[in-house]
Length: 111
Length: 116
Image (tube, rainbow over all chains, first blue to last red; front, side, top):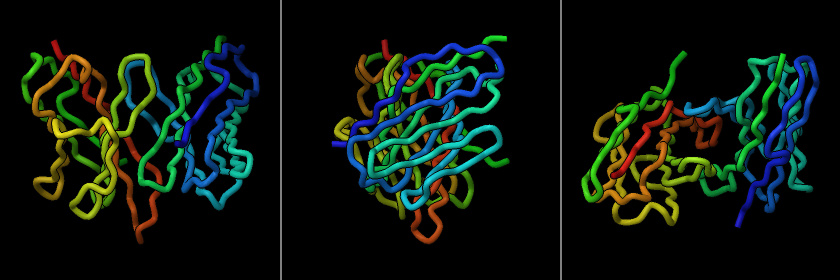
């Protein structure tokens, strides 16, 4: 059974820092992996999707990498800003047409 | 930019009552999903729907749950007899699915369901 874990659970950094959020999954046979942002009490905003054949995707200050063989993905946020404060969720499509979510990393960026 | 919409944003109901949560997926998307998030817990998959039928469902999605696409735009989740443990935020999502390829899932803002 696929399980998705995210570390750290929470992170507090000063504005301007580059940071890395980690996601690991137990079964490497995934279809794709998606990173989301969730603001308190709100829906999920898709940030990046990496297909299983890809190694990384970039969007602005965000870069996500995928290492299927080791069951890991990282989300790199460059030059963090207070507006980046949110919970970041990693989710894998495990070839059964559903996303399996991690518990998330709660990020706070302070001025 | 097109987005998934959900109504109502909040719903309070008595245990045992039926509720219908409504979603309008992004136009021309082919894959539709329902997820839920109990307060403080992970987002959990409930059901996926493609080509007018359920393609996958979780253990949570028992006989009390059903989905329907009554017309070309709406996608509904019905809970026949609500339980206290059904209290959660329910998210609808849709994905383009062109040529049968599963792509980014776009989520709606959610319906917060409270069962008393």
